[in-house]
Length: 395
Image (cartoon, rainbow, N blue to C red; front, side):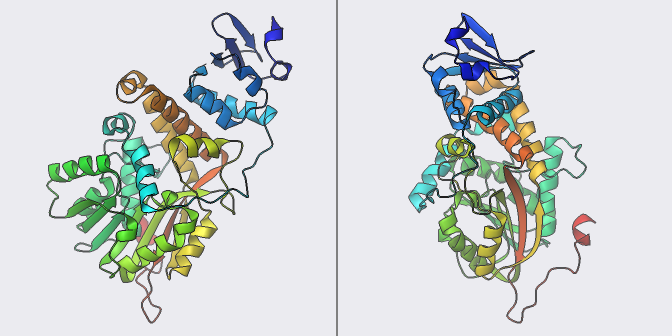
């Protein structure tokens, strides 16, 4: 019977069962936690030398199905690719993406315009689609997301009446909280038409039209006259691309007044050269999740900010906070798969299951990181408005 399973697979000791159709099943170790159901027998040859991209594509394209807890599925896939795949730590010579307005708009539409109702299934009530902030590590998702929004506002030292620019405002959760709790005027921009529609509805429902303005606008078209007191960008610069980082931060520098603050909150690469995540994980994300996305290393982000004239005054790493956030998102989606299947195509649901659980795993393993970088636009004489200590953030 074992002749149907390649010897490379039979030699492994993994908590994995491989079932070929409905007839044959082979356990690669005791007490299997995960079952790969092979629908296409030609896949067996490919998974004798697998990458995470090969395994993910096979599931997305319905050449195989998976059974078992999604977190265990990801861990088993990593073990399988580690044992039999290439010792690949990412391609240091990969070709940098070319980014223009049309390409970026298309990429944003693909990911963020999927379905507002689908995102509502597994995000918090405010629909904050970025890393939450866990002050003790025991908070639920909704509490941690509100804490993250307030954490950003406190770092920006927002004051009533100030003008805040929110670049990549999503569904407007940060914009509404900043206006509601900190009394600022907010201008939020996005490239997602679906996010903009629901975001405006929520602004109106809270009676904040006089304080919050959301619009469809590319960051390259922002005013460059220093009209804003503070600028915040959350989960946006991952879409900018390495080649455009200098332009991106120059736009933010030009948008804020002298003495103003700029906060950039985003996912960063663990590789100093900014290569994609290895063993095919980065290929899968680029193919199915974030087309044309690129993760700069913290050092590159700080370099481009500095070259634009911004002075970095504070950096905070929140890698494990994002792992916990993604665990919540993944668990929420897994608990509502039947509902999700009515809202998005089957292929999209397969992609998002792997993406959420896989990214949670990647953040835990240190494959990717998350940094909040606070910078000041100094006055002509070199002065700035940042307090002497960080005590006010936590008071």
